[in-house]
Length: 176
Image (cartoon, rainbow, N blue to C red; front, top):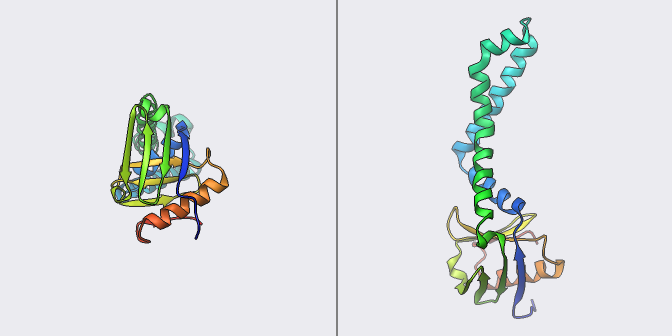
């Protein structure tokens, strides 16, 4: 496996990148998945009851307003909260500005906002490649996102190679 010593990337996060990651964080626990399932089943039950009733829509709504409110709150509450968090994050220079990363086999050099730093690979507990980005997890919630939309195919391949060289196999989950 021959690689150049480094991969240099200029990263500009889009709102969709941050929103996608925040939704992943919001729905990663079993409780949140169960809550989503309960909200979906409840909404399905409401639709079933509506199509099986002979009541007018006004009567049906008045009899089922609590169920409707609970299901809407369950299904809309979390995405709305995540959207608000994402909007606040995108106002920060760290998220809204361009960043530069240089991935070496022994460290990562980064320029994020006004901060320049070298980070050892050991800082990351887990590295995951999704269809849209690379996620460098510091812990179960915090991660640095490197979106693929600003990368060429050769850069994606080289980054995978550097990750494989720099980390043990149990640390990373890569697509290629």
